[in-house]
Length: 121
Image 1 (cartoon, rainbow, N blue to C red):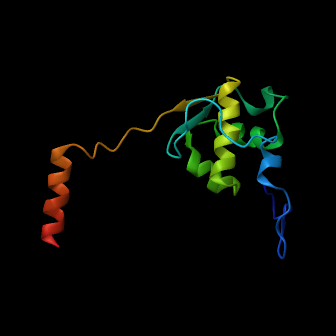
Image 2: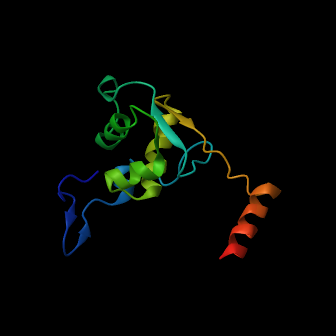
């Protein structure tokens, strides 16, 4: 997590490598997380003393359901790091995941509306 650029050197780039932020984890655990999935904290951040500062910040921001992609943008972290942090919190029962719904592009009505819209252009 970056605060006021403290982990960023203008010339050298990021000072802390992503694997350091994830405790050495390189892949999310459990079921795959989509960037549009919503994470919601099961408990307040201050009730979880055994989490990293980054995970604590994720929990704080997940007081209401928030998409993973928004967490990544707000915390200025790579999406892969967010997936790992959130998957670890999910495995520990500290967050719940609300799956994003597929767009339903196989629905013929939607496809017909797209074709009709393109023809009007």
